[in-house]
Length: 262
Image (tube, rainbow, N blue to C red; front, side):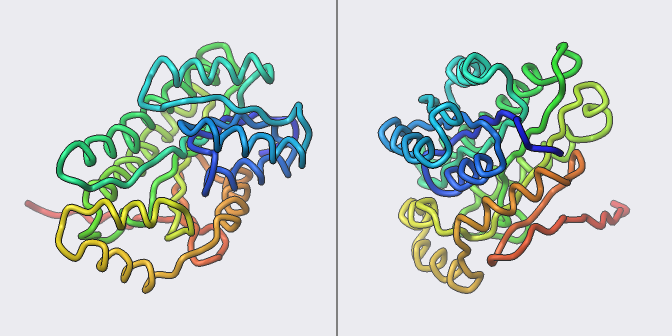
């Protein structure tokens, strides 16, 4: 994929991994709409990026992805601002495992809103809708490939992201819409979500178990995620899954499926 002159919307991109995506897209001459629930930090990030890359290259809009109307308005605002949309990165996510409303919010943000965003992306980029096609990147997690006792709901939502992206990324859907759907699975990355997950536990010793897992696995910098995302964006096939971890380059994840007699 040639990124020059493309337009991207990145959700949850005021800080952390999302901010790194924004910066690396701008470095590749992509115009970017930053969206986030944190207006103060979002506007600060927008101003920071505008100074580096130009006022006309980047904008910010307030968006709570759990609000379907606001999410759709954000896509419309991206098109009004830049004339089109070519790339949607569904990056917004939280990690709250508390037994009250926390786990429900995690499902809503991490999966339900991502599904809605994917369908909105197809609506506004799909060839079957008279558009030119495009790319949707859905952010999952490497917590999906082994049991994570401290984050059962978070890891379940990210597993759902992978399976949804693999399925909606198949030839049936790509041939109809011309929209690639890809999932990226970050390893542990130095962002605010790590201490957030540690502090929002519902089990005894949950924080210690989570911190131990982070230490054992290693924590990469956000810049590695930004660089890796660009590499995936340029070369990935529809429906493919990728891992980015430990300061390394992206690696495609392949499944070996075994059938069992029940």
